[in-house]
Length: 96
Image 1 (cartoon, rainbow, N blue to C red):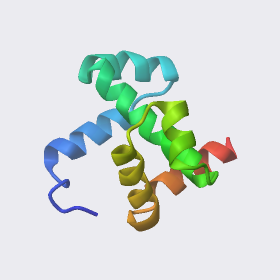
Image 2: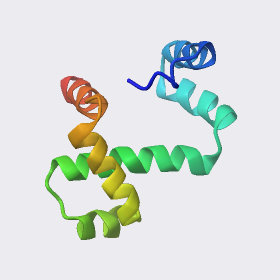
Image 3: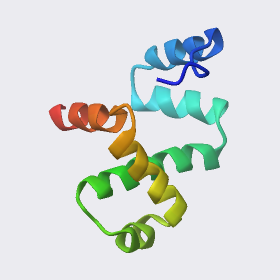
Image 4: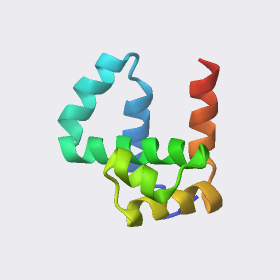
């Protein structure tokens, strides 16, 4: 994990997120802490990751999500060389 990311402020942010108990809590908190475009960008990356895991092509992903090839490539790099965060989340979503 990136050592620059590990700060007291980021710990507090993650602790705050961990207190959220419902989707409605998430909407309430994230609409205050982030812009609509930031939230949409994060959700787009998750959608792109899901489609990459399904072996969709960059063209298919770009057409469905509106993501740029740079974004798709960045997400693909995270899937292949990252910390397996996407895999962890997709596994947990699948188990629900």
